[in-house]
Length: 194
Length: 205
Image (cartoon, rainbow over all chains, first blue to last red; front, top):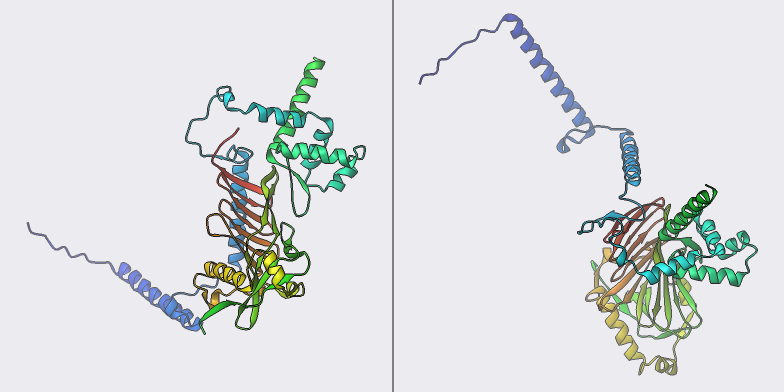
């Protein structure tokens, strides 16, 4: 099979355009060489001064990270449950109840079952506190009674004490338990009025 | 000289009164009165000690988050020999030569038997004791503690100002002013400015 050669005649206008383009490319090449020579970085490639751009990039990255965190925070992945990577399917409500340790459940409920202990949890919801700060807030409780209530809450895993500084902090289960208690109470109070 | 050797001094010292070797908001290492110590030197420079006696490590590996605190404090009795490298200035004034009786009270036959045990600990920590000069510990990098653990390795604690790194058999804890990382066998928690990201093996609703 023979291939026919076709000669295309370019118009004068196109030829002129191409000539201009070649000249433009040559001019740009010269400029580029000038810049790289001046900065003494020819061997490392083109030097581009980004000025304060890196700060801008950092700011953008920061806001993106904050955004991602915020979005994740809204969904179930974050929170008391953490990220779920269990291999088994999550059981429908009610089916997993046999796995609950009733002695532990009773211990937690018992820890919540005192007005002073609930008030201690309420104080700790706003942030960690030293014993003397709690004592100030709950002035009607003696220091020994306060200590024994804190011990009960600690044993139930609802609060934790820092060993070096001595502050008491409410734990995630503690905060959840306190929230549930207040909700149930509100619900019951509403029910009794109806 | 590229390679340098940490070496133990032959003198055995005793702690004259209860002493805090390191303390920050989240952690503390104490050693009790009458504990024994052998100086660790790099050339003529004092770099640390191997201690043996009754001591304690407290580390609040607790992460405060907006949703509540996570983690538990670590409380550990230090009744085996352990090593410390770091700032020794304050410690020196609480040490004096240990008498033979004091050494025997700590269940060592003589000075040499404690120095031998301390050397074994140092060699295990540094490999063969020889270390590249760039790897040498310096004061401005804070303090490093190595506590032998039941896996025949070391629990390592590094403290530099408020920054802490702790690595034990089942725990890794890294803490700076704003960022905290805690890894336990069940979960990994990353927190920045009290905002947590939790990865947990067991899910509970």
